[in-house]
View 1: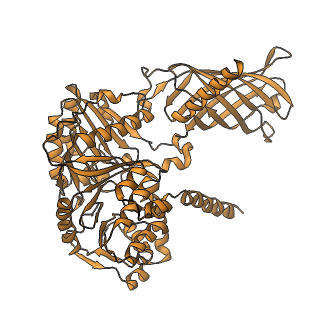
View 2: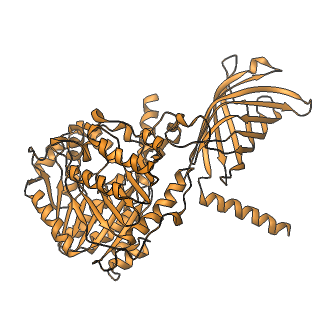
View 3: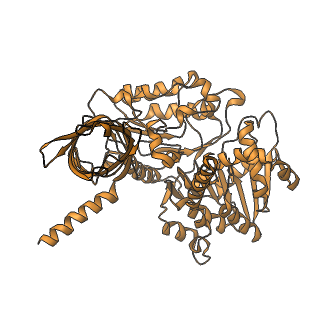
Amino acid sequence: MKRLCLVLFLVLFLFFTLSCSSTSHMLSPLALDEALTLEEKLLSFDIPKVQVTYPTVYYDGNAWRERLIELIEGAEDYLITSAFLASSSEELEGLYTALVRKAQSGVRVYFVVDGIGPFDMTETRYHLIPLKYLRDSGVHLLEYNPMSAARLVSGINLMYRDHRKFLIIDGKHLAVGGMNLNYISIGAPGEDLQRDSMYEFYSPFLAATMLDHFVEWWNEQSWETIERDDFAVDLQAADGLKAYDAFYLDQHPKSKKMSQLFGSLINEARHEIKVLPFLPFMDKHMIESFRRARERGVNIQMIVPFDKRVSNRKGIEYMAKDLLTMRIDLRIEKESEESRSLLHEKLMIIDDRYVVIGSTNINYRSFNLAYETALVIDSPELAKQVEAHFDELYSSTVPITDEMAESWRTFASYPRFAFGFIGG
Amino acid sequence: MKRLLAFMVVGLVLIGSLSARSIGYGLGYYGQTVEAQPQLTSSGVEFSLVYKPWNLAFANPSVIARTSLGTDQGGVYRVPYLQIGFGVDLIRTTRHPFNFLAHNVIAYAPMVGVSYSFNPKRNMSLLALEASPFKLIQKDFWYEVLSPYFFIDMEKGEIDSWGFNIIRFTYFFK
C-alpha cells in the first residue's frame, strides 16, 4: 500500500510538473501565423526590440576571464553580473579580487548567483571557494532560491532556478552567453575547461532594457531595494556605430515567452536551422515544432555534445529515439581529446540571418522552469561568423542513426533521462 | 460612502496581492500544554496559510489561518486548534546580529498576533495571543523559532493552555 502511494505521488508530481508546460505555445496560432512578420509576433509577445552593435565573440573561457577582468577594472559607476554557477578558485582569484577592489572603491557591484552554486557537481567541486566573502567588501551578493533544509518547505518551487549569465557595466558594456563564473567555465586548464561562448556588446539600448528587467527582479528578491533611475544609461553612447535589430527576452519560470519566441523563430525558417541545444531534453511540442519545419523542407542540423559524464550522456542517449522523429540531421560529437571538453554552448542560426544566443538550452527545463535570457540578433554578418564556428563543430560529428538510438534506449538509462528532463 | 470605502480597502488589498509575494503557506512544529486537561497536552506539526498584502517597514499586517495535528499524552492523534487571526510585524530591520544565519540579507521582524481559536475535541472557542520574537524574513520566506502562544478562555478570564511553536517556515508564492 505504501509503495502504491509512493508511485501515485510520483505520478501526480510528474503529471503536475509536465502538465504545466508552456511549450504548447511553440505551436500556438499566433506563433504559426504566416500573415505576421517575426517582429510583429515578438512585439505582440511583449519581447522588446533593441539595437545592438556587432559583438565580440569569446569561445575560450580563459580569454573571456581576462576580458572580464579588464571590463571590471574599467567600471566607473555600477556593475551587475548574474551567473547560474559562480564560485572562486585559485585560478579565479584575479577576477574576484578585481570585483572586490571595485566594490571597495565605491562602484556599486550587484552579483547574482543561483542557489545551486554550492552544489556544483562538475569538476568545479574540487576547486570551489564560496562567494559569501564578497559581501564583506560591499558587493551586493544575492543567492537566488538557496538550497537549504528549511526551504524544502517551498516544495516544487525549489526547482525554479536562475540560469541566466549576463553582465552590465555602466549602461554601455554588456555581455550575454553561456559561460558561468566558475572553474570549469573560465578558470580550468586543459580538458576540464568547457567549450562555450560569450558575446560582448557595446549597447546602451540593450543595457537599458536589461536594467529594466534587472531592477524589477532584484526588488522582488531582496530587501536592498534599488531604483531604476539610479542606473544611468547614456543612449547616445553608441551614436555613429553600426547597429543591428535584436529582440531580448528575459524569461521567468512558468512564462510562455520562451516557447513563443522559439516557436515563432522555427516557424520563420525557410531553408536552414543550425542548433547547438546543449542538453536536448525536449518535450513533444518542441519536437513537433522542429518536425514541422523539417516537413516544410527546412534543412535542420542539430549537434548533441559528447558528454564524458556518463550519467548525463546516458540520459541524452535515451532521448535520441524521440529526437530522431524530427527527421532532422541529428548529430553527436565524436569522442576525441577536444570533445572531452564539454560543449556547453547554446546557439541557433536561422536562414543565415537570425542568431539566437543567451543562456537558454533547447530543452524543457529552460523553457519552463528557469530564468533565462535569449537574444535574437538580425545580422547576416554575425550569422556568417557563427556559422563558420558551427560548421567547424559539425565536421567533428557523426550522424545519430536509428540503430544507435535504438541501442541507447534502455530501461537502465530511463532514470538518468527522467532526471535530466526535469533537472538538466 | 461606506460602500466606497469598503471597495477602496478591497482594491488596495488586491493591488497588494498582485504586486508582491502575498500568499504563502507554512509548516511548523508545536508543543502545547492544556492546563485544565493535562492529558490533552500535545505536540505535532502545524500547517498555516498566510496572506500579507504589503511589505511595510513598520506594523506590517498579515492574515493567518492555522491548524495542527499532534499526539496527546495517550498517543492519540488530535487537532488541538483551528485558528484564524491577524499578525503584525512590529518593525522590519536588516541591522541585526543574525545575518550570518542566511544566504542572503535577511530582515528581523518580530511579530505579535491575535486569533480566534477553536478546539474541536473540546468544542471550545478561545482567544489566542502569540508572539514571534525570533522571526527572520526574506521577500519569499519567513523563519520563526520559539514563538510562545497562549489560549485564553474569555468566559473564565484565565489562561486555558499555552505552548510554543518551536520552529515554523513559511514560503510565499510569487
